[in-house]
Image 1 (cartoon, helix red, strand yellow):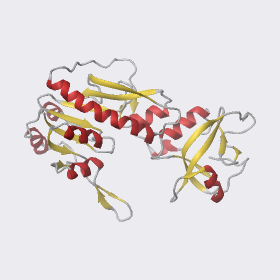
Image 2 (image 1 turned 90 degrees about the vertical axis):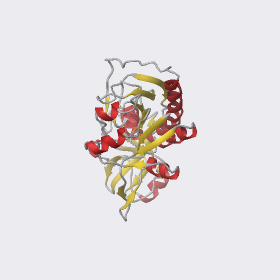
Image 3 (image 1 turned 135 degrees about the vertical axis):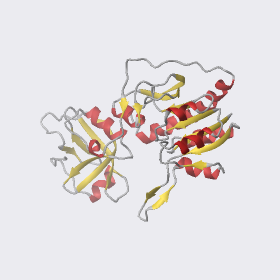
Image 4 (image 1 turned 30 degrees about the vertical axis):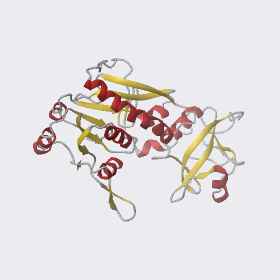
Length: 310
């Protein structure tokens, strides 16, 4: 099929690879414009942009689709369909309607749960046990369209946003060619999303990354893993700000007489009292430093039982 691919982050890149390998005619790839990055503030291409150039595909990076010229250029591609994966720009109705079969979106959750920008992180942070990838017919609303294909993935107790991302990306890459094959033979069935169970995966704000030790240990653990490695859940200690990148709920710890945030143990790990239960921090990172195991971290950062994290 003749298609446009619209995506930006690493999650989307394997989907593009699979569509090209399946022999589809990718008329153009749309991605977010390069942004300054690093100490030299050099313009950095998105993972999809870089891959598309490696594949010698036409890459387009409009800032938005507000101009008639940008919308007309998209319509002029004369597409059968557009595949959209974490693109990051709002598509107006004229763009959604331009391809003969409209625009299909691959979304990293089981809709209507976690519509929006950060479904992988939000699923872990909420303590969900299962998520997935779904192919959806795009509408003007935010992730409101009917579901066409779906595949579930279990969320393990030690999954982080990074590991769950790596589970879901190949699932998305496998679903896209299946969806187009079904579309070609007229085999896609639309299933409207239920009205109940709608939740929104709002973009992670810097303020909410701070750890709230008054929460139950399970919630703190999910918060840490859901924000790892980026932006990273953090706390303040006497030596400065520290990111907690991996944790487990501590077992066999009695914290009833300890205040939330109080350190209970630093023997090869950092055990911290929470509002209910305690948590063991296993991978930590100081500003400007590499992530380290708790044992190595403690050699260069002074923490002791009785200290209070905020």
